[in-house]
Image 1 (tube, rainbow, N blue to C red):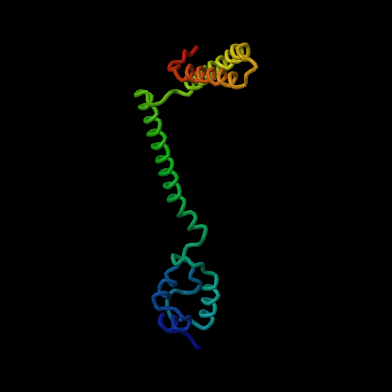
Image 2: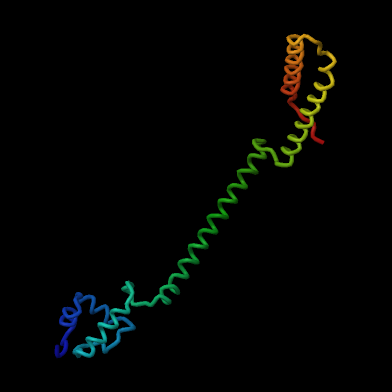
Length: 167
């Protein structure tokens, strides 16, 4: 090939469309002069240059693409942070509303209640341990009935305990 008189001929030789050559010529990194005619030496330079191209049709290098993406990433990060903050504020507002309506119990109050209930449970078990053995006799059926009645009584006392005095 002696040369390429226009973009259409260059495009045919490169195996791309004329529009693609038009975009190539406008790129900042275009390796030869921007207007026809192009020589065979120019054609070989263009072929080598095309092998270095990424799939990015904008003509920007990877560093430039990364720089261009920074504002978008910062915007996304800001949006995520705002959404997370709104979520936590809404969650806190819900907890505060539940506390105000007494649908929720503060954790320290719940811990005290649980501790107090466990203490009352242990007290009932201690009372069973003290009161049942003296009443047991040699008859296994009678012992079973005594033990069953004592356990039912303990269960009833625990279930009737509706209020716990928190210290």
